[in-house]
Amino acid sequence: MNAGAYVAKWGGPQSDLRRSYLRVGCPGYMIEGHIESLAPDGVVHGWVRDTGSHAPCHVQVLHGGQMVAEAMAAQFRADLLRTGPGHGHYGFAAHLLRRLPPGPCSVALHLPRYGRTAPMALLVPLLENRAPVQVETLLMIGPSWTPADVLGRPSCLDPAGNHLRMGTARFVDAAYRFVLGRWPSKAEAQFQADSLDRGRLSPEDILVELLRSGERADIDTVLPSPFDPAFPFTLE
Image (cartoon, rainbow, N blue to C red; front, side):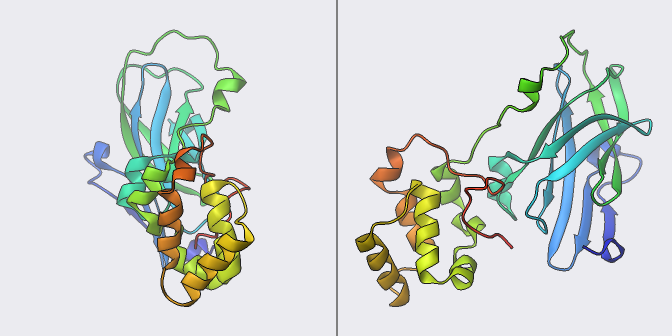
């Protein structure tokens, strides 16, 4: 990415930092984000959506120019999926490295990958006394998207674009692997390929049909996230 091509915009007037957010526009994609809240347990919640990258965004929270929390913005957020663009895996929960005084507090959202920083504000609650954060807590996996989430906006998987890039056979394989966690049988692959090639079903129809299937309803495993090596699609 060419950082010189970015146009940075800060949402909200500088006199009201609580309305501020990070937005960096570039032809074809956008980087935007916001710090939403600080919970009493010392966790900063927010989101950063980078529609031009296949990797989650590294986020830092700054106070007085010093980093006080950091995380990867990769947690699934159903609200971000519904509103779009993108796949909704843009949330972050960053544990404070040191306590902040209660009350209104000026902070900044910093993206090291792009060297971008946006001033923001937090209302700091009376923080709980807690033991140091364990590594296991930092590595905990957040909520995963469900078939119902994807059915609400199947275009997030860019079915038509993936079909075009992959070809019919590979797309059918990818759809089965994503939804059902298995390869299609020879008969299933032939039927779906014929349906696509003859225009009886669209790529989105194939995904919707599998997501609504009884077989998917009986599966306990979660759908792979876009950052999971098992995710079979390319999102551009």
